[in-house]
Length: 149
Ligand SMILES: [Fe+2]
Ligand SMILES: [Fe+2]
Image 1 (cartoon, rainbow, N blue to C red):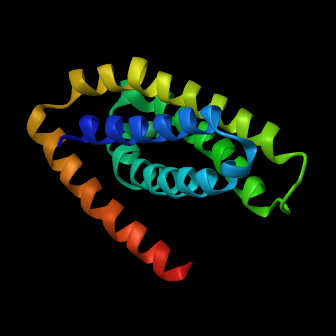
Image 2: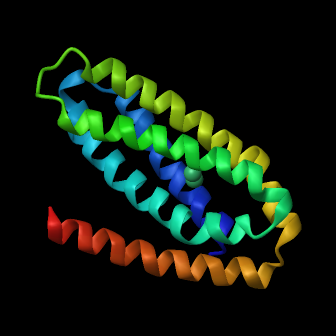
């Protein structure tokens, strides 16, 4: 998988989890949130440590990367707040809803604006190489996170 395919498949995975949240009772949302968080933690990690730094080397991609980083920052704040909420908190459902809206918006920007530009700037060999690096990093990130949990 090249970098774009990998990131898109992550996005799809998270979107499926969002659809599940919408289709299930509140009692199931805590467990779904744990999965969403695990996926998003790994995904933002590989974007921030491998994908975004590579993009930032290109002048024409700088602004959109900086915007992406700010959106990640907000998402992480929500993820942290949701993790820290005591069970049965009234804030859980509305916060989860806003998180999902924010992520959906962020994904639309990446897929609609950022990725088409990336495809123009980088050749397929570079994107393949980036994809490989991110896949490896993702696996080790998930492994070490599970070990620490
Ligand atoms: Fe993404
Ligand atoms: Fe992102």
